[in-house]
Length: 126
Image 1 (cartoon, helix red, strand yellow):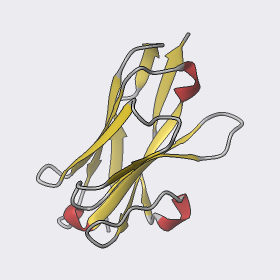
Image 2 (cartoon, rainbow, N blue to C red):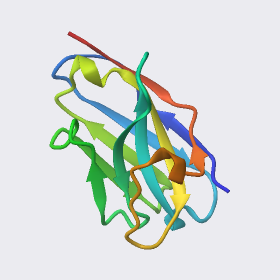
Image 3 (cartoon, rainbow, N blue to C red):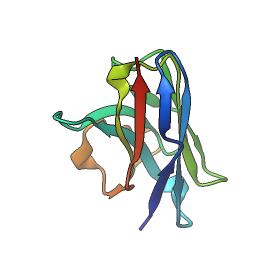
């Protein structure tokens, strides 16, 4: 099993940047593919980014492509989401998620993930 704790959320003006981190417990973090999802009020959960267990493969939602970058540090048991050029529509609670997978496995659907963090609020003001 793995436990996930997100951090780094906050309030930022449009055009600004934030860096979210997700710290994982457990000794087998390198076995997990990771992802970020977000949930905004009145909307369904939305896929944001996914990264393979090695960190060598990534996938992004079209709405964040070119602005967000995910990275995975297996030595530190962390996955990060660098968010640049933030927009008010990026406002949401951001969750990291984990699932075991093969080397280059990527999943963009939430139901494929077994473990979830508690979320961190990101608010972008206009």
